[in-house]
Every structure is written in C-alpha cells, then in structure tokens.
Length: 450
Image (cartoon, rainbow, N blue to C red; front, side):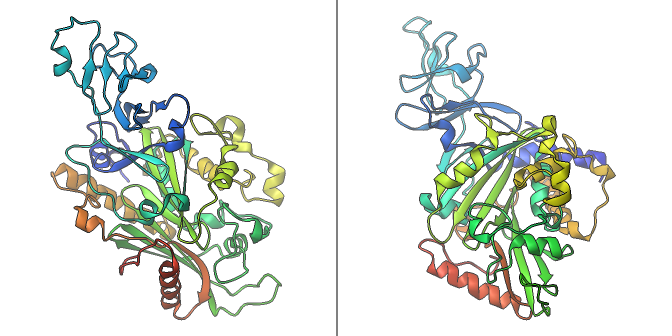
C-alpha cells in the first residue's frame, strides 16, 4: 500500500476523507453505565472532536460540543441544572439540543441568548450503548441487526481502550487465521466453565473444545464474500486428527466458523452456540480508539452481572483502560509461554489482540506489510473502504446509509462456530440456524445473505 493511501484510510479528523465518510454513520459514544453515577456526564473524544454527553433532569440525553460558544470554556465541568448544562464561567445555560436558555451575566432584556447555539448532535440509546451522529443532514436508519433488535435482557455492552488507530484494531477481527496462533491454549479447559469466555466453549454439535480445534488446525480454508451488510467470512477446518479420547477422525466432519465484517467498522463473531458479539472500533483520534461490544443472545437472557464481573477487573475506570499494556509488557510471562499459552500474555484474549494491534505502532505502516491468502478479507475490506470514501467525495451515499424500508430488511447476520458433516455443510448449518431463530423469542428470520 502506498503511504498516501494508508493516510487516506486511517485519518478520521474533521475534514479528512475517511473522517467525512465515517461521520455518515451513527457512532458509539459511551456505555449507558458511564452515566449511571451521581453526575450523569462524560466528555468523550470521537474522531478528534471533543464532546460532552449528559442526561438532563428529565432523563433526556444531550450530546454537545465541549467548548462553550461564549468564550470557549470547558463544559465538561458544567453544572447539570435548570433543565440543561450550565457553563461555570458566566453561567450560560444550554438545553440538550443546543439552544441557549439563559445568559445570566447579560442584561435581563438582552436578545443574545436567542442568537447563540451550542453545537449539538442526534443521540440515541440501544442495549447499553449510547450512539451519536456527527455527520451532515438527518442521520440514517440503523439496520435491523440482532444487536439492535434484541430485548434489553438478552444483551450486554462493554468497551475497551486501544492505543492505536481504529483500522488496525478492526482488522484483527476479520482475520480468521490468527486465532489458531495468537489465541492458542496448550491445555483445554472444561467447556462447562466457559460462560462469557471467547474460544473456550465446545464447538456447537460436538464435545470438542474450541481450544483444541484452533490449536490442531492452523490452516483453515477461508472464503470471503461481499454481502448487503459487509463481508461474510467462512473458515473451514476438516477434522482428520484425533478426538478428545485420542481416537482418529476420518474427515467426514468439518468445523465451520462463520464471522462477518459489518460495515462501516464492526465485526460480528460467535461467543457460544446462542450468543454473538458485535464489536465496533471508534476513533478517539488517529492514534487511539475504543472498541464497543454488544453480546447478544438468541436463546435465553444474558447474565449481565456475571459478564461485567468477568471484565471489570481487567480495566481501570472511568476510562476502561486495560490494566495490562505496553507499560508493563502486557503481563508477559515466559514460563506461561512455554507451557500454557502461545503468547505468554494470560488467558484474556482481549490482551492478546491489544498486544497485536498496538505493537504495529500508533498507525500501522502498511507500506511494509506482505499480505497472504489468509488476509483476503482484509484486502476486500480495504477496497470497500476506499470505494466508500470515494463515494462520499463524489457527494453520494456510502454503503449502509439506507432509507428506512431497506434498513428494516437487514436482519442477523448469523455467526457460527460448529462441527457438522463435511458434505452438505452449508445446508446442514442453514437448517440449524433457521430452527434456532424460529425457536427464539425475538430473532427474526434471515434473508438469503444472513
């Protein structure tokens, strides 16, 4: 890749080609739990823009620029009172939609407040994530994906900070081959203890743990295909090794893992037979980003307390910064690397991914990389990204900026991790997932591209 193209795809500040493209979509801004305290206000930075997100006294959400339009004072320390956000410098009060309600230092009959407006942005809250639209005109409709349609008790939201550019953070999630190495475990845990843990459960339709499959089958057959929502990735591993009792397998069964890139900047992967993870990668600035994940179950409700308990100890609050990082070697243990994990970085796969993408530098230098056949989805996504940026430059709508009737038709997609027949695997898993959705209390049937 040429250096100028790398810059074009990775820089997302106001006025940049990728920044103008990314602003055409809803962006995760914060977790709902971040506004759960005594003072429901946070000051996120998104795509280089400094913002303030708050709940007013009526519970309504406001997303506004951080600098007061009077003389630029920092509204992150503003007072939440009198139906809005009040600047501490001269007491100017702003409603959540940006109108100025009060300029108390001015004469009582001053018309100034009617001429002043604080920059504000559409905002909505879905299943534990607060979303904002920072682009021009009216915001697009969100597609009817499972993560947006699931009942509140069937979803769990979480986030984490990465000290690197958004694009390399996303690309690790559309790389099916890396899991056999970066996330390799040398021993298999009891799948019964796998709730909420990535790559620990038994693969659907078998008692074979995912750890064994990834460890022993490091050359998956990978296919990537464009879909209306992004890219569908299929990784197949024909089972011709040994089972959990050490008995030979004859290749008549195949492990199939189906994951997705969901445009613009998410991936969708299985956690277990009922639960999938949809994860977005949102720039803070060009050198750092947050990932936001929604865990969604088409079966029973999610144990939200347990999911949070498993994750909260790995970060520091309020910034959701990982406790292991570059400053402490990501917790590297050489003895563990010899005996337990491929990396020696503990059992939290988020730390593995963090090391992989932060180690590429703040912004990966793609002029030096050498891509292989296993990188086909990454090549496809970069091409789609370039095409979408060019569309916005021409004044056109990029993919997934849809009218309501089209957005409502995009259901799913289905992420799968299962073992079934080698012959007829597609028909087999289509029937399994169709039945699963039919039995679900809320999941809608899929179209041909689910």
